[in-house]
Length: 324
Image (tube, rainbow, N blue to C red; front, side, top):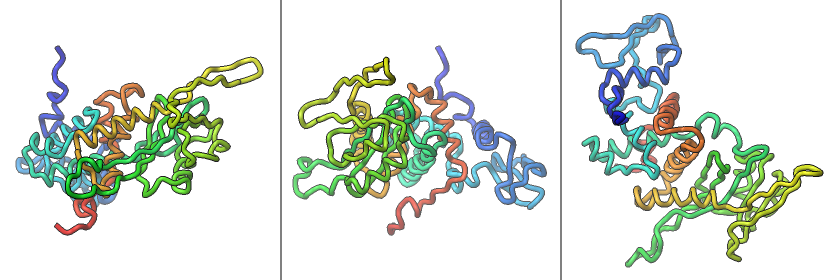
């Protein structure tokens, strides 16, 4: 029987945790956060020195691998950070703040902020968010959904308005989701043009929102859900002698919405409009880097760790400037 994943040294030992993070964020060796020096550096190893501390002999300042990353200004041990990163990446529908708090035995504030910083690192991953999804021979589906409580669940007051989410998903590939103020052609068309490759086959439902987009893509197929049509087979001519049969449906994106809603309603239970975009980062990331695309839990967590570099998220920024 193989050893449990969380028994690995970097999950249990602080020195091993720093070595693991340094290997990911400093692949060519340590770099001074203050002046960029790479050569005149030394690791401080005194009995009272905190783990991972270096000194730059060019600018005379100390630094660690935490600086200039999402880790900065966090007092939580690095090994606990790595544990929660792995659990968030391995849990298909997320892990709640209350559960993080119980596992780490920390304050609710620490657990809540920890989760949001990890979600921030899940955004802007190379190879997915820097270029349009889809491409030649690929199919991109588009649809919209609404996140929020149902009116029937409120006995004495009307629920807050649902939040609109539009997603693009490449069959067998990545997904991108956007929190939009309203679902209109004027709002969605620029998002689609920027994030879906023009050489793709584009599939939507019968909504008028997507009308007139066909000329942007190789083809534009639609399914009529109001007439209970969910899958249709079409033959498309590739050249003078070759035909291929293709399925017209939006089942792929509906499946993604199913995961998204089960996670939000079943695990998080409530997501405010201020933070919805970060939760979309989380669900998009796990879906885009799922097993089918060649990533297991360990590789997925390593990609999140790569995303920590060059980013900061303060507690005041996360709270949107609201008073305590």
